[in-house]
Image (cartoon, rainbow, N blue to C red):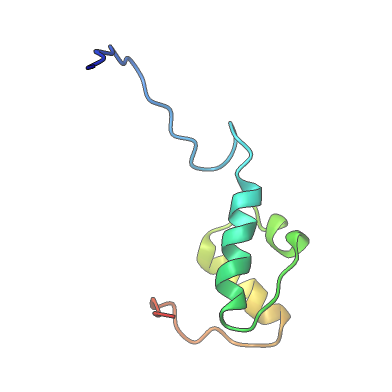
Length: 76
């Protein structure tokens, strides 16, 4: 069955204002950082809400006294 919808608008919530996406962001950060031996708690991720990803990484690495050498994508 084909449904014909007349869409007048689409809302993109890219920053979590309309829906609470921080739990999903935390799980994503936690998962990827664990692969390189870095463990984060919710506070370390939630306090960076709204930051650019690279800024968050730089701060996380600085807090563990490790320097981020490259911003290139790496395959794990």
